[in-house]
Amino acid sequence: MALIICPECKKQISDTISECPHCGFHLNNKDSELVKVLRQLAQEEREEKENGYIQNKRNNETASFGWAVLGFFIPIVGLILFLIWKDEKTEEAKLCGKGALVGAIVSFISGIIYSCFMGVQYGKIFSTILNL
Image 1: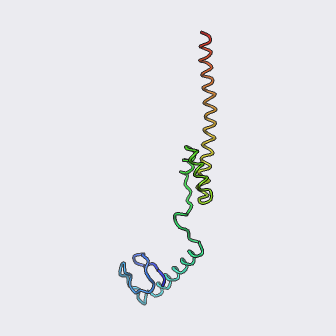
Image 2 (image 1 turned 180 degrees about the vertical axis):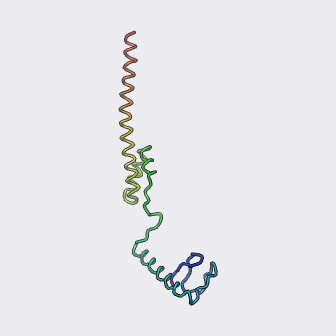
């Protein structure tokens, strides 16, 4: 027994029945060619699943730019996600890691620029105080 897709309601049904239990569509003799095609497709799908060609939708890697943005703004989260996902979700892990790296570099450079700017400001304050 194989499961096929009903041509009318698109739900899975057994290939041994003559009428769809969901919508009542009759699979009579004139539809036998259609049923054969549906059986063949169901068999091919089963074989692909057994061979590992069809992955579970939860395991599909659809990398999102959002992970890179998260890693950029919160580099420690990006680093942790990179370390957790590096073997399972490689594309998402790469995006998290890249975002974390870029975020850390930008933060470091911003800190240096801020320190230089504040050093100049504090220098002016101290020179003003010493000149009094």
